[in-house]
Image 1 (cartoon, one colour):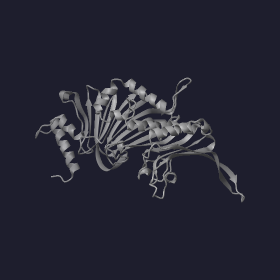
Image 2: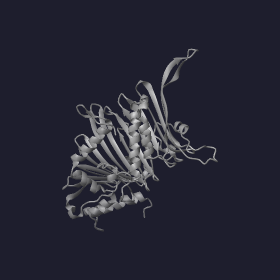
Image 3: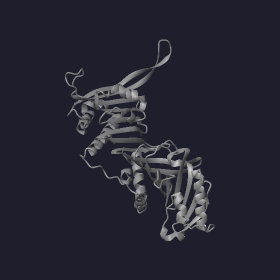
Image 4: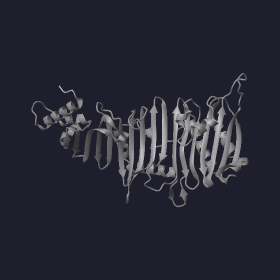
Amino acid sequence: MYNDKEEYLKRVIKRTYKRYIGERTDGKATIVDVLKFFNISIDTTRLEDYDIESIDYNIPSIKVVDKKDNTTVTSKYTEDAKLLNYSGNTKFINVIITNPNYRIESLYYTNSTIPIISQLTFIKDDYELTFEKERENYFGFGISADTRFVIRYKKNIKEGRKKGKQSLLTKIYQIKDSNTFEQDYTYDLQHLINYNDRQDKYCYNEFGTIIYGINNIEIKDKLHQFNGVCFEKINKEFRSYLPYNINKKDFTKYFNKNVCKSAIMFTGSTDEGIHHFLTISKNKTFNNDDALTTDDNIHLKYEAIKWKSITKEDGIPDQEKVIIAKKELQVAKINDDNISSLEIQSILEQLTAKENEDIDNIFIQTVINELMNFINKLEIQKGFKEEPIDELSPKEFINKTFEEIYTLVSNDKDKFFDLISNQFHNATNIKLEQGHTKILK
């Protein structure tokens, strides 16, 4: 008897393979019996089309060729789980299927036939369209969700010393119990091409309320580091939902969760070093017996500042805050519940009113666009309107099998590549035709 499970597995694989090729006569085995150790499935109606090109008992690993479909399958027991950005003491089975039309890579626990994460990649010229499905795990950058589905659009770069895969557009949808998370963002940390406009937006739908955030929007030569978050309802864990570039202290400085019912905050900077801050708060209503009085209004505060270099009396250089613009607006509450789409619409009317033209700038215009996005998400969640159809939404794929996805995409591959390309161009304001520019949505 073998005490070490891994050594025992290696011996069983070797014995099964020897029986398959006829070197052992103490039992019978088929190619299916060998491949089951490596989580490789084949068409049992045409076993003659498959050859085991190589096998290593020590790793263990295997390479199988499907001569009819011109497909190669490799499988390997490994501690290096690249799909999860993890390397450690845990063993996985990594299976890769490749042929001229697609590539599938899947990672399994050694005692499971259900993949932790799988990627199906289609290639067209220099571009790749990848569909990725991941279930809950805690390895590397694993997820604490039931299921996550990601669509990735990348370009293969081979220009001089610049070689690699440049991420262009990533779309994420994940489910945890009845709660969902969505995120769309352009580019990544690699910088193999010249960037156009950028965006990174996300949305939580948790316990029936919406949290909409913007990690960043950049519009070339106009708007830099635009960030924002819209809470339909403030909760005690609000810090976990803030964008990367909104400081927790800044948020709590403006919004007290014990007082504030709903909160919205936008920050950003424009040309000439002007910094913008806009907050919207809807406070709770208190009984007259409480220390805090009833607040019947929703409050909007806007400020634009610039830091001016000065020299102090002692000759030491310093900076002085200069207020470029300042505005406080109010709209009446419709009710004492969470902020509603109708109340946000009243805020938009105030922002676009003629008497407030003094704060009409690219920052405010972007705020208006994002408040309209927030309204749409609220109304979809409440059932007031239907969500627009997006054939490349991860939400549309999360419950599909990879066989279904392969059939759907391979039957009209050009259409799906054109669709993801247009979505990338929309998100980055790239000019597709002379004199026409896509608008940031």
